[in-house]
Image (tube, rainbow, N blue to C red):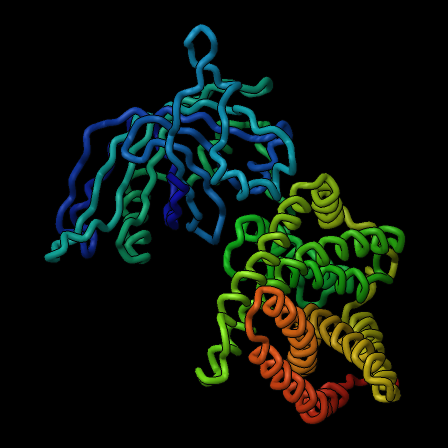
Length: 522
């Protein structure tokens, strides 16, 4: 059985030992309150030697007892909300003597992809054992469906450390979790619990409390004050994008919809930020990181390109009249490009499990935690950031001029691809400056995005034509009629020419107008 997932919306409260849960019968919308018999929960929490999961506010446990015993992986989402993945318990780990052997715990394969961006090849071993005497009170609405609104748990917890440096501990807490109830019910329950002597929990989880002095502090958040320095703007953008990259890691490994695309976008954004804000950082470091990110982007690109091409061609076949589709065209496209996609995904998974990728993540984390900046990073952002952005704008304008001066079609395609890359780079750079430039930065980002999209359609059309020629040859080798592939290629060729002549000029004109005060006219 594969892992299941749901959103956990809950709040935790510290209480004195033996505190009685206050009455909940007067809560708005609650018409019936039922208390369940006590249960004993026994959970083993796992982490790396350096507590990488705890640092990322992730908990991984194997728990017995209760109605949801099994493996639980909890991932932060937003305030009061966590993603929880659940996998079956499996056989208990035992040694040769038949006794419990925690060193033989094996994390279910369905959960592992969701933590690899943090564990990075390091072993997961037991950290803490928590036993919990739990009494659950269930809150129901009085409607015909008997809606299960929420549950309030009274927990008496005992923590037994499985690592040196932590003392055993015990405490009591209350926990309220929404089931099918409205979010405002959390506030209503909280008022009752606080009035009953509870206090908002000091830590984010039972594990953090059990770890005591070993619990890693939350990572520092780079914020942008009202009058930021250039370095503050840069670091906020870098931190956000690094976190986005890691957030898409699991989806890219498992082939989740759009995850590979979003991870490649985050990779490209990081390369842009390291280039745009390069004068603010150690040059050797930025050169190295941009090289490693290029390798990652190329690895992601194979799977993404195969996915997009397959979707584009199948959609194109759907638009054709039935008499123009000779032979099993859709099946041939689906089969051949499906194979290409699977091969690309295999290469991607190998790349994401390679020590080179994990080393890159380590280096990005180190950059965010302790950036090696130049003195320019301490200057006011309002003076530095427009100049940095101006470099990207001028680079795009040069690429446009160079493309316009080329007559040879093959060389012109290469030049237009360069224009597209510089437009994307300008877009990502401009988006990072909106905290300083406001509307002007947003307008430049939108104009650059539009130019990149126009050229993206142009390039996709060129790639599609090449793929259709290859598919036509494959069809012929299988004794199939290649007429439809030639027809589709002609349609794409006409589309490519139309995009290059009309939409391109309009998009370039809009970006060219988005000059900021102080930029030199190119």
